[in-house]
Amino acid sequence: AVVERATGKRRPLAVFGDIVLGAAFSPDESVAVAGGADQSVRAVRVADAQPLWNHRVHADWVTAVGFTADGRFVASAGRDKVVKVADAATGTLLTTYNGHNRNIGRSRGQA
Image (cartoon, rainbow, N blue to C red; front, top):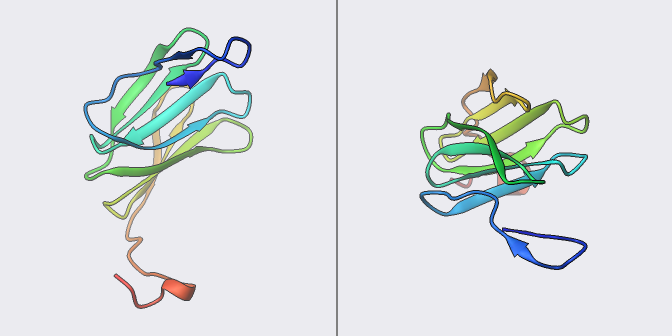
């Protein structure tokens, strides 16, 4: 759900088949993306809750999503130890970063 700034009213943006674990707004706040336990990443136009794209690109839960500072790309990360980068406008998958299974820093040595 999103809360309208002017009225304070809440309204749903999208319906997921399971829990949402990560969500973000584009820099201009016109688009929201979310990812969750259903392994999908979805983009929705905030003004009218119009779905823009929905892709099941991960093999496990999507735990984080975010936009680049210029709003051109969306990155998603999941329990599948993969980071995916997609075109924010179309959802077209551009690249995949595999093998994120080593912890660094204070978490080093933890599973």
